[in-house]
Image (cartoon, rainbow, N blue to C red):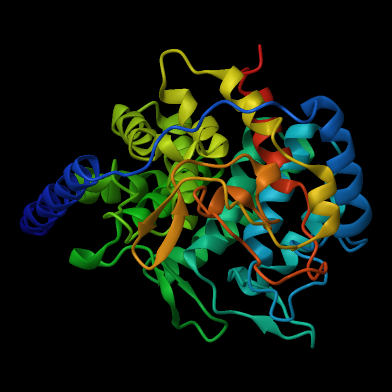
Length: 387
């Protein structure tokens, strides 16, 4: 009881600080909602192109997904994107046998690793972003997977959850030591983003193993005040890559529990990020909205350019777009359609106000798949947002 009271006082103080940052962000916000733009593609036709290209150039016979081509030597984001792409394929309803085999290899002795480097050694500096990718896979397997997929995914998840429990809810390296960003529950230092990740994992694994239900309940009671606030930003001190991860955590938690704490958190995420026009984040938040706007998602996806991805990371310049000085960067005053942008491995985790990218990159260097387009489109479709 004393520990709970102490943590609640600390966590309510965190909430006050976060709400203060929200107020500051509202008072000084130089960005605008974007003007309308003409669509350049039919999303249904583009889905076929992107998926065929993903299978041909980025999906390996082993089941591994190359999130960039050429493959990064350290495979640093393999677990993140392997989880996302396998979740997408489950939603699409295609065979994921090889992907499941590869995912199993990312959990040696139940410990999640980032991936395997080009020399075959494991990159075990696992961060919480790697875990979010895997979390999304387990969610899709439970919700839309076949019985076989659900069973195999559940076995991997139970093994992982047992490892987390054995290491005091921390992601660890192969020596059993917590990684730099791996402490998901850390007392007064607990990060709202990481604790919602842990609770998301527990909310799913308890379906397969009821012994984890009490773990979920205990942690929920300790950290309830901060659970609606996994995304924090203050003006230009912001990390774009954690917005969609926060939305993934709360989306899963709300679907699993129907707890209004998580619904409030989803609505807050979209409230503080609406001007980014990030359709993937919107799709994740839509389950907490009274009247979600599927037209907005479809319009956003119609701004993707298949040919731009074919060209890889090439220069993108927008001299005619109004801009603002934002911290140390010059940003567009409003979010640009994707055909005006330089290619990215996953647009949804990059700044939607990015103005000039890959400056000086006149030749294709790194090729990117259409996973971001496919993932958003298939989740929106599965949630009935295109009806």
